[in-house]
Amino acid sequence: MRECSLAEGASAISYMCRLFSPVDFERLRLRVESAARNIEKLRERGLCQSSEQFSCAGGIECPFLRDAKCCIYPARPLACRRSISVERRRELQERISGEEAALLSLSPTAPRLLPEVISDLWQAGMPSKYHNMTLGNWAYLRNGNRPSVDLTWQDESEDYSILDRALSIPTEADYSPDFTVLKQHLDADELYDRQVPGGIMPTFNSLYKRRLGSKFDWANRKFEWGDQSDDGMPYTIWMSDDPQERLMMWDAAKRCRGKVLCGGLGLGVFPQLALSLPQVESVHIIEMDPDIIKLTTGFWNDNPWPGMSQCKVSNDTIENYLCRTDEKYDTVYIDTWDALYHEYLPHINVLATMSQRVLRDSGEILLWGYSMMIQMFLSTTRDLYDKKHEYCTATDTQIAKIELQYPLLLKLVLWMRSHPRCNTYELLEQALIVATTSEWERGILKIADDTAAQDLVNMKYFSK
Image (cartoon, rainbow, N blue to C red; front, side):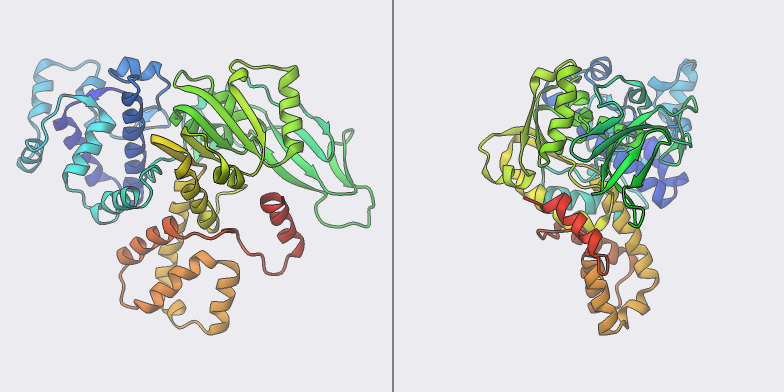
């Protein structure tokens, strides 16, 4: 990641506005804002006073890299250009419109890193054809709702080097009382719809929870019911360190600072990644399942890893711990839900609110997959608008069905029915408010007809 001037930042913004679709622009803008705030956190700790020092401090990669290629290549800063003549540099520096020049004069600063410069320009009012549904709304929600939760942060790293890192992960075997760990591999070589450099996906481990009466046949490598009359799946996939999980946790780890509280132990990937970075002092894990603690920490005892002495694991629910602890943390990272599903948002918002009381000044809350789930809800909102007439004329029976299965979406449907003349942007703005402010104790999908599935949800998330 290189330094750039305000003029170069303005040129990059103009390029993005001209050539990027609204969806691509918004996706890239979130990555840029996230990188800018990550840099700011590093600077606060004296770890990012130059581009070289930033690289050494465990910072994220340039947000404009996609598949190892620059997506604003024609408008990249001069510092990113290797062989270029003095005349060409001067020509590029002079290619700034009068409007951009006037804007630049409002906020003269010394050159800084590219994401910081572009973020400053947006906040100063640099025009964008997508401005109505981008920076303004996100900034309002971020600063007015929960300042410690950065809605622009996306745990969607493309730092594939982490996939080959050796970690202390339980090896494949049956573990008591009802867990089986299997080593697996992906058949595809794609993540996030992009090719992985090298084309080879590493192996990973998945933890399966066996249902009562089932077992794993190691000779044939398949799960079986002890009683063949049983039907349904003999197992549940409980957790994994698959490539996407590693990439997302690595992005979260690089965002963490100082004393870290983490909700959810899993297979123990996150604390190993976080404590490999100099800006992380300690990690305290809260895990509700004692069997998971026994499995993972038991393996650690026989296979220790660097920094393990700075990792503490406690048996509790993250909700209970946040309510009663007097400890203060620089970062709270929570990963206690099993999927990226927007109906989980109200429960996650509750956790975000509860986490506020344990933060030190300038602390930050990181929520696994949060921005992705918000984006999913916005995508659903666009589909909702396309069927506006159907929802506005829905019967009471149809509304009741939505309430049973999709209580978060219902709030948006009811708002739309009371504002039948709303346009797309107004509905999307309301969707952002609903997604980030709705709170209730169990923001989980209510499964109407599947009692076994509902029992599983209750057991995994709410058993005491």
